[in-house]
Length: 339
Image (cartoon, rainbow, N blue to C red; front, top):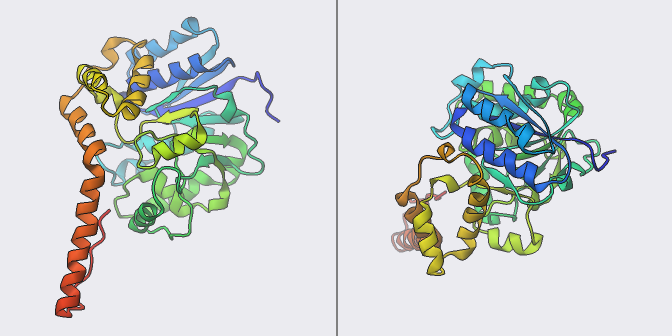
């Protein structure tokens, strides 16, 4: 039984590339909850300077009881596994939390590109029952069912299977070890030769049974820039954890965003970017040194014209191919799916 007032164990896993976002995520957790929190970091290569910055938080925030860094048990297969350039082997070590911190009985894992905007105790107090962990399922929360079928087909997941998001996990550490989650994913990775778009997330969905995790509400892993985000937000009213899995707020040009806001352009989308900045502005300015005007305009274009682009690329193109096949009777022509 989880008692309100317990120390909430929050675990992050990162290398030096995400040390800045890690500070923002951890700080938002401390600010947004009235409970005591302990910060644990699976250290996959963080500089001493960034560690020292986080260690000082025990004095800055009265409810931060501890900040602990510890290196995980390294697995060579993770370093050798083919992954996209914007990922690193660090993404797999969320599965080794119970081994890296064996003293923990229960933990909340979060990616570094999140902020906590409501009391994290709402997640901590969820009853997992007999499940080793809990995660948010993506079905109809953020993407359409058609998009999800295509995404699953790309990595070989049956269309009837649910697809969970690994960016936020509520973990019962003892049951997680007993279920051998780490070993199952490790075994799958050792035999997998293809490039997975979301390496650890796809691996977990492929090799784990859907009933091995408890389905959490979408408010615990709200993705603001997903196609169905507005509809999801109407249902949940207020998210607890906002996850910037598509576009990173620290890459946006602040002057340009504020100018576009004055023009009342994309107020809903920019609302969540500005909400992130409300936390990041309280962290050392040198933590975020890169902002891109190009990235900002690219985001604006996708939000304004992404739907039209999708319609032209998929509906009209596929319609023309069908017309060609019907007119010429060429059965060998097939429609190539666009993902």
